[in-house]
Image: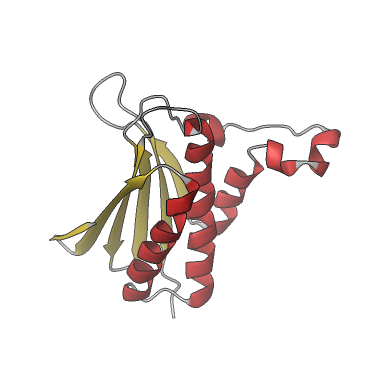
Length: 153
């Protein structure tokens, strides 16, 4: 984990193996950054659920890949918001499909674990959600960006 400061913001970068066992580390890092930013308990809990869902989406895609890809989270804390960029070092893991509208068949409603519904939950938990290209090369991996703004108060 490393940190840096740039014009009015603080950035923390965390890289962990892309596996479920490391999500506790991700959530702890998120908690520390969000507390430092002055987010409420409820906002932090929403962020933890949203980040976990986005990471799970990547983990499900990487389950059989060798070598295991790395998960890279960049937390950028600004005066009024927290931006979380979640990506991997694998061009085979994409987030774009997660944001495409899906109509769930009636029989799927009983087994939501088989659907991408968790990523629709993200839209309710964060203020802004988008997918960004990973870099300049054609095969650079995508990243999902979550932005949560501080509540006025």
